[in-house]
Structure formats: C-alpha cells, structure tokens
Length: 523
Image (cartoon, rainbow, N blue to C red; front, side, top):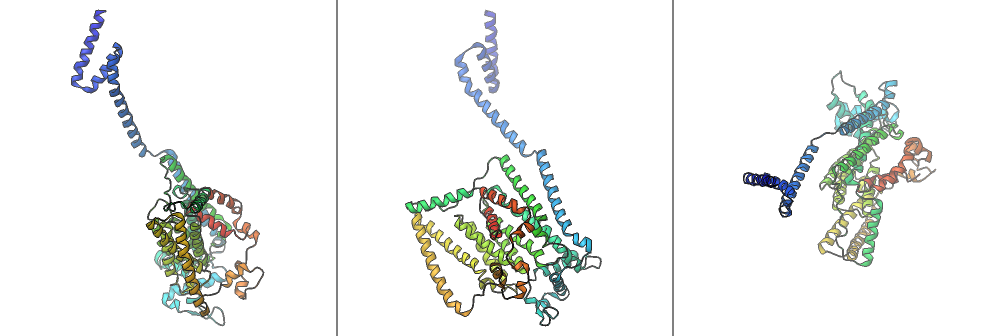
C-alpha cells in the first residue's frame, strides 16, 4: 500500500514539475491525478479551466466549419443551376421556333396590310434618313388624300428595324436584307418579351418583396383608423417598417431559388400563350410585335424600382421612364402602360404603402417619362390634355401633396388625428385650386375628348362614328369566350396565382394584382 501511495506521489510530483514547463499540460495532468485521488477541492478548482478550454475549442471548430461551408459547392446547387439554364434555353428556343413557322412555310414574306405599310415606312427611313422621314407625305396611303407619315405613326418599330440593320447586322450584300430583318423582328422580340415577363415574375417573388400578406396590410389600415379615432399620439406610425430579412442562409437560398423558378416558368408560359403568339408571328411586322417587349420592360423597371431593402432602387425610375419613352414611340397602347403604373401608385397609397421610395420612383417616372413622351411627334402635348391620361397627372400632384404633408407631420411630431387633419386641409385647398383652374381652362377646349378607341370599349353595340375604329375587332369589348381562346389555361390558373400573391404581398407583388384586376375586369 505504501508503495502504491509513493507511486502516486511521484506521479503528482512529476505533474507538478511539468506544470512549470507548460501550463496546458498542468491542467490536464492535475485533472487526471485528482480523479484518481478523489480530491474534491482540487477538482473544483480545475473545472473552470477545463470548461473554458472546451468552450474555446467548440467555438474554434464552429468557425472552421463555417469557413469551410462558404467555399463548398454542393451537387444540388450544380443540378439546380443546370436545370435553370436548360429550362430557360428550352423555353426561349421553343418561343422562337413557334414564331418562325410562317417563315419556314412561306418564306420571309410580310403578311397583311398594316405590316406591309410599316415595311414601306421602314424602307423610306432606311434610305432617306430621319429628317426626310418626318416630312414624308405618302401619296399611296389613304388614297386619294395621302398621309403625312412622319406625324401620324409611332416610329419606334421602324427606328428599331433600321438600327438593327445598320449597326448590328450591317449593310454588306451578304448580310440579311431589310425585308428579312422586318420579318424576323416579331420572333426576336417575342423571345425578349417572354424573358422580360419571367424577370417580372422573379422580381415579384423575391423574399425581400414578399414580406407581408394582404391580411397584414388590412390590419395595419384598421389599426391606424383605431389610432385616429382614439386620438393616440403616434406620429411615426406611418413610417414603413423595415422588411424582415431571413438570417438563415439555407432558408434564404431556398426562397431565392423559388423566385428563380417562378421566373423561369413564367418565361415558358409567356412563350406559348396564344394572346402573345398572335402578336409576334414571323412576318407580322406590326407595332404590337415590338411594343409588348417595351411594355414588359417598362413594367419590370417599375417593380424593380420598388424593391424593399434597396435604398437606391428608386433610381430605376429613370430606366422606367426611358423604357416608357420607347413604348410611347412604338405603339398607341402606351396609354394603358401609363394608367397601369398610375393605378398601382394610387393603390399603394390606399393600402398604406406610401413611402419615400414609392414617391421618388413614381415622381421620377412621371416627370422624365412625360418629358420624353411629348417629344414623339404623333403624341405632342396629349399627355397633358387627354382625359385618358390626366388621371396620372392628378396622382402625381397628389403624391407631391402627400409627401409635403408627411414631412410636416414628422417635423412637427403631430398625433395621428392631427396628421389626418393636416392632410385633409392640404388636399381640400389643392382640390379648390384645381376646380378653379379647370373652370377657367375648360371653355378654351384645352382638354381633348376621350378617343374613339377607348369609347368603343365601353359603348357596347354602338357605333363610335369612326368607320376605321368600328371595323376593327380589337376596338370592341371582348367577349367572355375570347379570354379562354387567347389565354387558354391561364384562365384557370390565373385566379389561383392571384390568391397566392395575396399571401406573399408587398409593393412589387401588388402590381400583379392590380394588373390582373385591370385585365379581367370585364369578365
């Protein structure tokens, strides 16, 4: 027994001697000796040191694993990206192949009357230049009266075709002729429009843009009404809450991949939907073949300018205005684009989603877009005179009043009730000034009437007085069966998507709801 105790003392002595050389080894050897000797006091002193070492080791291991995970490319990611690329390329190829059927069967031939006139105008622009084109009087159109082409058409498509021919394809004899370029433009822009539609779906499906639900928006409005009735002092309750950002990287990645898939399949649907196909068939060189792409580009930049979490996204309002200018120069349907964006801007205010970003996005778009639109000869000052477009001007003025009132509310720190009193006072004064101004200007016939095209949509089974308008089916109200004929299965899946968007709501997704309500309002 004495020998055994002596050995233990020697081992403890060796451990003590080793402790003078290295503190780390001291803790370990003493811990082992304490366990054998059963000395509780010595074990109690060493536990904190042992626990600390364990924590440091665990922390170091966690950081190492995290750093390794950042550089690892998983097989599932490779499969996902490969699937996205293959699916997107397949949809684009399908969209292009379908639209080339007419050219493959009949050759590069311009179809129908309007496309052939557009080709003649493009040919004149190509050989004579822009200045002569603007002054061109075509004696072969509207015979025997003739037509001043430069001031009566939307020249965006002609300018696009000439630009592609001169600066992309080239003027060499071996290159495509101007006729071939005009025949292929509908197919090219049909693919572009399909991709842009997918980009809109992607933007509206991002996690940062879908941070609430329609129920949460309605509840926010109700709570504000309760605060006004209760006269509670909450001057900053109107400030927009910052969207919740997903901290889990894996969950955020899954949601981002879901948004990408939404964009890819939206591209595929737009590629084959009959309503788009009939406007982008090869050889159908009409304004809509290019204008649909311009429309989708304008809408994409608009929803992009509203992205949550990006403090400078309102700068995309400049690109929205530029795309809108291209839309104005291409097709008379620009009125729908303008009113669609204006309606969405008004809807955001009604839903309590007004913010500095929304204000800047719409203000930049309207100011710059209108300034560019009036440069198109056929448009002129119509955006400031036409009753169809003055609603967006009223929304723009309302945005300025609302922004000024919000600044005053924050500066003076008004209660909710007093804030609403200030807003109502400002809008009442503005409305009074507007009524006086309209009363003074109205006798001078400054405001133009509603166009016969729009009038024909709301006056069913009634002639508008314009034979050209009355003879075209697209100027008449659509029949209910036409929606299924042109939209096909989207009539079934559209309402389902509408309800899904309400569950993933936000500034950008609400544009899809506004668009759907406008498109299907007559069903």
